[in-house]
Length: 271
Image (cartoon, rainbow, N blue to C red; front, side, top):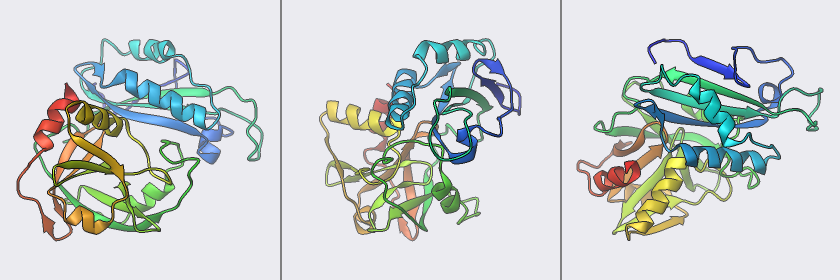
């Protein structure tokens, strides 16, 4: 894309309007995915659509058939080069009150220009620890729902341009994720990532890496991690569907000067 303004479709038609009674706007009642477009193709598309549908089902929404999303995307096929794609599904408009109505779900597709360094793989990350603690809600754990106020407040904790991401813990002091990413550590020849049974978002890049690393014969485990385990790790990495996988060079005062496993993981993730 070459335009600075996002291109937006609402149920397949160009529009930038959100009805005042849309439950996604009023209550965060919906789900979404954000992913890269590379050379005109949305990266990991089948996995993204499958995860969107799974998340929708968990909150009682019926997701559109994948062919419907594909038809929306086809409208931009001649324009797409490199950028960021966001898919949003809300419960749609309904009467006032929390009780979900039999509203018609509304889908939104948004295409943005790629932001500087959003797909860069060579730059390492500098990370801080957030003071905000994530609350537990097992029924929503793993879902990328529209209520992201915890992440908004956590991201507001820093403005320094040289800090790329913040780690978030829960009230039991378990490390859960980054504000915009999932966490992996390489420790004693094992690839570890936090369990997301109580809170956090299970990203597509995370799920893809867990599967591929296991297929390649690595010892992979979802487990509880505290900050000491992260500081003691041989290598620390963050993933999401926009940046892929990037290694952490510095966390607070701790430095990891050299990559160990991250280069191989990037190759597997993008294969």
